[in-house]
Length: 286
Image 1 (cartoon, rainbow, N blue to C red):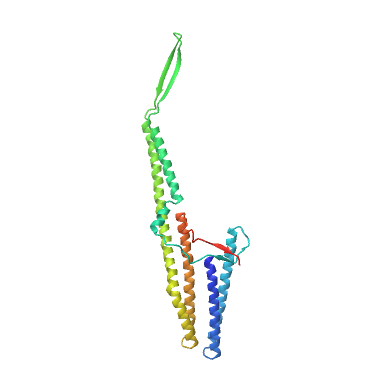
Image 2: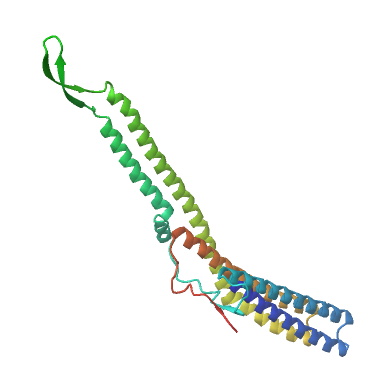
């Protein structure tokens, strides 16, 4: 939502730049300084910019409805969302995040299963000891018409050998749990590594575009537009400078959205927010 909202703003800027470019081209054409074909091209660029703006507005309208549905509403009661697309929070090292991954509930399940298997092993080892049962009773002797007190015990033969299989089975089950835990940890490590470094790259892209590339392209557009009005540059150079600036700003929005998406993936893996205070979001009626 935040990314598309920014795209709508950028599309409006693109439409305004195209309209301004059309005005400049028409002025030069009226003065006989540029052919009529350039006017037609400028008109086409302006129309395309307006179509792009309409498409972005429609996309934003759909996303508003989709978000409202998550909140149990059929009709959006807001016109925009509040939040900072370019707020990524504090940097956290990969090692710190991986330690949190180890505390992921999915890993804790294996810890609980491991403790259960330990109990099964102890139970099997206990049952492996001789299970002696005692019996006491009275017996009547028919020939002498007497009674006798009888006592006895029974012990299963080869109990140790029979129960050793149960112990081995329980130990194998525990080993399997530990292996599954290591496999899952390795998988989570790979996912975290990918999300962490992609997020870092996206943040670097946003910061570089903001600090140096976009300001330079803005200055270049001003100078190119001025040079075009004076006849020093052609229409192609003017349009190219404008398009380069818009592409850079669009890339910045996409990189910021990617950084936040990878941040959300990291939060899922660690089962903790990267920055509680920075994760503010709301629908703002206007």
